[in-house]
Every structure is written in C-alpha cells, then in structure tokens.
Image (spheres, rainbow, N blue to C red):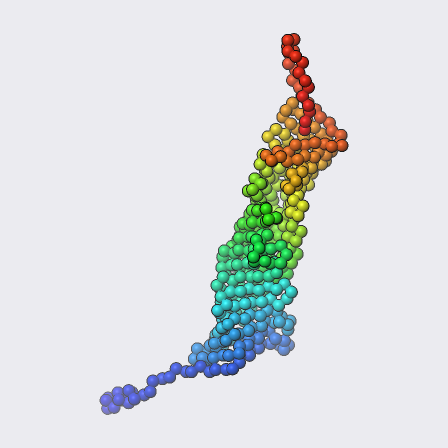
Amino acid sequence: MGLLVSSCGQLQPPKEKARPFRFEKLDLTRSDENGQPLWRLVSPLTRYQLEERRSSLSDPVATIYKDGKPKYTITAPKGLVIDDGRRVELYEGVTFRVLDDRQIVVRAERVFWQRDYEVVNFEGQPTLLDLTRRVVAGQARFHTNTDTLFAWKGIKLKSWNGQRDETATPALEVETQQVNWNTSSGAINMDFPIKGIQRPSPKQTRRLSSPSLVGNTRKEWYDFSAPVLITEPEEALSIRAGRSRWWAAEERITSAEPAQGSLKELNVSGRALEIQQKQSLLTIKQDCRLLQPDQDLSAQRCSWNWDSGAVLAEGDVVLRRDELQQVTRASRLEGVTGDDGRIKFSAPGQRVETQLQIQEKSPDPSAPSPAAAPVQF
C-alpha cells in the first residue's frame, strides 16, 4: 500500500508558474466624489503577474490633477504597479514636470509614487531645472497636495542671470544640506549652513556664508540669517553683517542691522548696509565710520564705488587725523581710494572747519625760519 502511494505521488505533474497577462494598453484613472480626475496612469504595453499582484509597464505616463486640471506629469521608459496599484515605481530615467509657465522639471534615476499619500520620492541624483537655476541633491520628495519639494544630502544650487545657460559660468552657486520649497507660492527654506559664490561681474568672485536662509523664488528675495560673511579675496574685501536680504532681480543686498568690514587698510562700520551690484556701489546709510591707520572719519552716511574707488561722506562729517591732531568738520567730503586701500579726502566747493594743535618749541636764533606745512585732509 505504501509503495502505491509513493508511486502515485511521483506521477503528479510539476506545478506551473502562472504566466503573466499581457495587455496592449493600461489606462487607470481615479476621480473624486464629484467626478473630477485625481490621477491617471497610462502605459501602451503592460504585463500583469497575478500571483505577485504586480504590473510591468513600458513607457508609462502618470498625470496628477488639481481641481480637475493636469498639474504634474511623470514619464519614464519603464515602470511597475505594485500591490494592485497602491504604489507605482518608475525607473531608468524619470522626468517629473510641473505644468505651468515656470517650466520646472525634476529628473532622477528612479521614482516611487505613493498615490494614497500624494507623495513622489526621487532617488538617484535628483536634479531640478527651471528657467534660471539648476539644483542637484542626494534625495528628494515632492508632496503633490501641498506643491512642496523637500531635498537633502549635498545640495548644490546654480543660478544664472536671465536664461539658464549650462555652458556659461553661473552668477550664483550655493551649497547646503537641506531645502524646503513650495513651488506654488515660491516660499523657500534652507535650515542648514549655507556657503555660496556670487559673481556680480566676470571679474568678481564674492564668497558668502550664513547659518540659514528663507526667501521667495517668485518674488526673488532671500533673507540670510546672521552672521552673514561676505569676502572678495582678490580685493582683500571682508564684510560681516546681520540679517541681510538679497534682491536677486535687482542685484542688490540690504541689511538694517549693524555691519562692519575691511578693505586692505580701511575698516568700515555702520548700520543700514546696501550693496548695489549693477552700480558697483556700497552704501552705509546710518552711523558711518571709516577708520584708517592715520585718520578716522565719522558721518551720517557714506558710500564707496569699488570700480572707480570714489568715496562720499555726508551729514555731520568729522575727519580726525593723527598728524597735528587735525580735526576737520564739514557737511560733505569726497575721497578717492588708492591702490593700498587708503582714502584721501577733499571738499571741493564746500565750507569746512579745521582745527590744528601745534606744539611750540623754543626758538633757535641760529636756525632759519621753516616754511609752513600745507594743510591736507
């Protein structure tokens, strides 16, 4: 009896693995209670594995809707629909596109689309491109319900003035570790330390750093938190400021907080700093002080053009020089910066008041009378 059972068992055919179903086209759509589409997934060629509850897609196109209108598309050469559609994986080069005039595109090697949670996860060097910038990150995810992109791990941002041109040197480069960006409102946050290189002109390289940043890409302003450090090694220029705002479209930096800086042998301090890049002009609008090895100037306001070297001090100007303890007062003084960074002042057409302290010595009857030294300031 036992031999008979054994023999019958050996005669049973091996169990065949279920063959996948093949469809010429997959077209899945989900709508809300009002009948408006939420998303759609289309593939011209699909293979469905029954046991694994998984579909293999060729050239899939996913469309995500908002208020019944297409808002985003995701395209890739290949894809998978896992667990009967609860999760979609697209791979071998994925393009995520925002369907508006800003032309925002995110590219990555692989994307995981969690439809129930309205989240798109990017893996494999996700790269964001729009009209003026390029951002590369280690990982990123996009929340389609809030239009928010989160990116982290070794973020590198490059931005060009005008149209993005990958063959040209970018006007701005920034490195940080995390970015949160709402593509709809433009609000952006970088909560990690920032290091950047700004190029106001082809001949200028300005380095900047800050602990964090908030701003708006639509309105094109960015607030750097204190301390903000700005240096130009070629000009031996260094500026330390409080919270500062960069107006990108106007190419202007402003700060209402105290600031101090140095240019070779010149030290500058004051409040209400403004840097106008197009005019090559640095202005301190309150409590300006210029300190050099042999002279000290204070004024309500002063400005410096780093191209021409011209300096202007206005409002209750007081210039003190070590030589003869000279004190000059005026409503306005003009100056020019030498190659050593030192400023020579003059007051063309202005009324000035100058005080000198001359130490008298006992006259030597045999010595000739010296000529009076000219007064300079």
